[in-house]
Length: 177
Image (tube, rainbow, N blue to C red; front, side, top):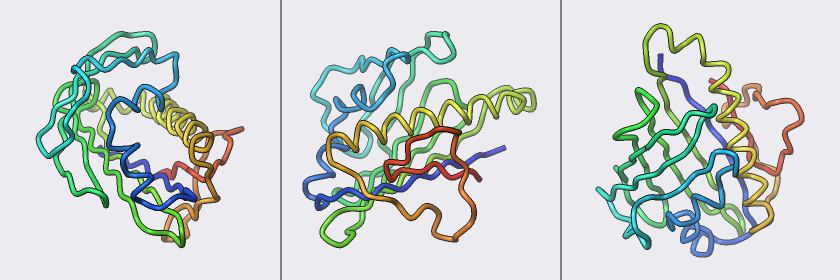
Protein backbone atom coordinates (compact mmCIF):
# COMPACT_ATOMS: atom_id res chain seq x y z
CA UNK A 1 0.00 0.00 0.00
CA UNK A 2 1.36 3.42 -0.94
CA UNK A 3 1.20 6.06 1.81
CA UNK A 4 1.58 9.82 1.51
CA UNK A 5 2.95 12.40 3.92
CA UNK A 6 2.56 16.07 2.99
CA UNK A 7 3.95 19.09 4.78
CA UNK A 8 3.71 22.81 4.07
CA UNK A 9 5.96 25.56 5.35
CA UNK A 10 5.95 29.30 4.77
CA UNK A 11 9.29 31.04 5.02
CA UNK A 12 9.64 34.85 5.13
CA UNK A 13 12.35 34.84 2.45
CA UNK A 14 11.93 34.75 -1.34
CA UNK A 15 12.57 31.57 -3.32
CA UNK A 16 16.01 32.74 -4.59
CA UNK A 17 17.17 32.81 -0.94
CA UNK A 18 15.40 29.59 0.12
CA UNK A 19 15.94 27.18 -2.79
CA UNK A 20 19.77 27.10 -2.61
CA UNK A 21 19.62 25.84 0.98
CA UNK A 22 17.39 22.91 0.01
CA UNK A 23 19.40 22.23 -3.14
CA UNK A 24 22.64 21.81 -1.17
CA UNK A 25 22.84 18.13 -0.17
CA UNK A 26 25.27 19.01 2.64
CA UNK A 27 22.33 20.57 4.52
CA UNK A 28 20.57 17.20 4.82
CA UNK A 29 22.65 16.37 7.89
CA UNK A 30 21.48 19.61 9.57
CA UNK A 31 17.84 18.74 8.88
CA UNK A 32 17.97 15.20 10.26
CA UNK A 33 17.61 14.36 13.97
CA UNK A 34 21.02 13.53 15.49
CA UNK A 35 19.92 10.15 16.86
CA UNK A 36 19.56 8.89 13.28
CA UNK A 37 23.33 9.37 12.84
CA UNK A 38 22.71 10.51 9.27
CA UNK A 39 25.89 10.76 7.23
CA UNK A 40 26.35 11.58 3.55
CA UNK A 41 28.83 9.15 2.01
CA UNK A 42 28.97 10.76 -1.45
CA UNK A 43 31.89 13.21 -1.58
CA UNK A 44 30.79 16.83 -1.21
CA UNK A 45 30.00 19.11 -2.88
CA UNK A 46 27.42 17.21 -4.92
CA UNK A 47 26.41 18.70 -8.25
CA UNK A 48 22.64 18.67 -8.00
CA UNK A 49 21.05 17.81 -11.33
CA UNK A 50 18.68 15.26 -12.78
CA UNK A 51 20.31 11.86 -12.40
CA UNK A 52 22.59 12.83 -9.49
CA UNK A 53 22.95 10.02 -6.94
CA UNK A 54 23.53 10.51 -3.22
CA UNK A 55 24.64 7.75 -0.84
CA UNK A 56 23.87 7.97 2.90
CA UNK A 57 24.34 5.94 6.04
CA UNK A 58 21.94 6.19 8.99
CA UNK A 59 20.25 4.28 11.77
CA UNK A 60 16.52 3.72 11.93
CA UNK A 61 15.01 2.05 14.96
CA UNK A 62 18.60 1.26 15.99
CA UNK A 63 19.38 -0.61 12.77
CA UNK A 64 22.19 0.70 10.56
CA UNK A 65 21.68 0.78 6.83
CA UNK A 66 22.74 2.49 3.64
CA UNK A 67 20.43 4.47 1.42
CA UNK A 68 20.91 5.72 -2.12
CA UNK A 69 18.67 8.30 -3.76
CA UNK A 70 18.62 9.72 -7.25
CA UNK A 71 17.40 13.15 -8.30
CA UNK A 72 14.63 12.17 -10.72
CA UNK A 73 13.39 15.71 -11.42
CA UNK A 74 15.48 18.90 -11.21
CA UNK A 75 13.65 22.13 -12.04
CA UNK A 76 15.31 24.93 -10.07
CA UNK A 77 14.09 27.02 -8.38
CA UNK A 78 10.58 25.54 -8.40
CA UNK A 79 10.95 21.84 -7.61
CA UNK A 80 13.01 18.72 -7.38
CA UNK A 81 12.21 15.08 -6.67
CA UNK A 82 14.44 12.45 -5.10
CA UNK A 83 13.64 8.75 -5.33
CA UNK A 84 15.14 5.84 -3.45
CA UNK A 85 17.24 3.50 -5.54
CA UNK A 86 18.37 1.39 -2.58
CA UNK A 87 17.18 1.57 1.00
CA UNK A 88 14.61 0.52 3.57
CA UNK A 89 11.44 1.29 1.62
CA UNK A 90 9.77 -0.55 -1.22
CA UNK A 91 9.00 2.93 -2.63
CA UNK A 92 10.27 6.37 -1.59
CA UNK A 93 9.54 9.45 -3.69
CA UNK A 94 10.07 12.87 -2.09
CA UNK A 95 8.87 15.94 -4.02
CA UNK A 96 10.09 19.37 -2.91
CA UNK A 97 8.08 22.27 -4.40
CA UNK A 98 8.68 26.00 -3.96
CA UNK A 99 6.15 28.74 -4.73
CA UNK A 100 6.05 32.48 -4.12
CA UNK A 101 4.00 33.41 -1.06
CA UNK A 102 3.72 37.16 -0.72
CA UNK A 103 7.26 38.36 -0.10
CA UNK A 104 8.28 34.90 1.10
CA UNK A 105 8.20 31.33 -0.14
CA UNK A 106 5.97 28.34 0.42
CA UNK A 107 7.76 25.01 0.66
CA UNK A 108 5.62 21.92 0.03
CA UNK A 109 6.97 18.44 0.60
CA UNK A 110 5.18 15.32 -0.52
CA UNK A 111 6.56 11.90 0.32
CA UNK A 112 5.04 8.82 -1.28
CA UNK A 113 6.29 5.68 0.40
CA UNK A 114 5.58 2.00 0.58
CA UNK A 115 6.90 -0.35 3.22
CA UNK A 116 8.76 -3.56 2.37
CA UNK A 117 7.70 -7.14 3.06
CA UNK A 118 4.10 -6.92 1.90
CA UNK A 119 1.70 -7.53 3.60
CA UNK A 120 3.62 -7.86 6.88
CA UNK A 121 5.33 -4.48 6.55
CA UNK A 122 1.96 -2.76 6.93
CA UNK A 123 1.81 -3.91 10.55
CA UNK A 124 4.71 -1.54 11.28
CA UNK A 125 3.16 1.41 9.42
CA UNK A 126 1.91 3.32 12.51
CA UNK A 127 5.41 3.19 14.01
CA UNK A 128 7.07 4.21 10.73
CA UNK A 129 4.53 7.00 10.24
CA UNK A 130 5.23 8.44 13.69
CA UNK A 131 8.96 8.34 12.99
CA UNK A 132 8.54 10.19 9.67
CA UNK A 133 6.32 12.81 11.32
CA UNK A 134 8.93 13.29 14.05
CA UNK A 135 11.72 13.69 11.46
CA UNK A 136 9.73 16.35 9.62
CA UNK A 137 8.88 18.10 12.92
CA UNK A 138 12.61 18.26 13.72
CA UNK A 139 13.25 19.61 10.25
CA UNK A 140 10.64 22.33 10.89
CA UNK A 141 12.38 23.38 14.09
CA UNK A 142 15.73 23.68 12.32
CA UNK A 143 14.28 25.59 9.36
CA UNK A 144 12.34 27.88 11.70
CA UNK A 145 15.56 28.70 13.51
CA UNK A 146 17.43 29.37 10.26
CA UNK A 147 14.76 31.21 8.27
CA UNK A 148 11.90 31.95 10.65
CA UNK A 149 8.62 30.29 9.67
CA UNK A 150 5.01 31.37 9.54
CA UNK A 151 1.92 29.26 10.01
CA UNK A 152 1.29 27.04 7.03
CA UNK A 153 -2.18 26.40 5.71
CA UNK A 154 -1.99 22.60 5.92
CA UNK A 155 -3.89 20.60 3.31
CA UNK A 156 -5.29 22.49 0.38
CA UNK A 157 -8.49 20.44 0.46
CA UNK A 158 -9.30 21.56 4.02
CA UNK A 159 -9.31 18.01 5.43
CA UNK A 160 -8.24 17.46 9.01
CA UNK A 161 -4.54 17.14 9.65
CA UNK A 162 -2.77 14.55 11.73
CA UNK A 163 0.09 15.69 13.99
CA UNK A 164 1.89 13.81 16.70
CA UNK A 165 0.96 14.96 20.17
CA UNK A 166 3.16 17.76 21.43
CA UNK A 167 4.59 18.61 18.01
CA UNK A 168 5.75 22.18 17.76
CA UNK A 169 3.93 23.72 14.83
CA UNK A 170 6.52 25.98 13.25
CA UNK A 171 4.40 26.19 10.13
CA UNK A 172 5.31 22.77 8.76
CA UNK A 173 2.56 20.30 9.41
CA UNK A 174 2.50 16.63 8.43
CA UNK A 175 -0.73 15.59 6.79
CA UNK A 176 -1.92 12.01 7.05
CA UNK A 177 -3.38 10.28 4.02
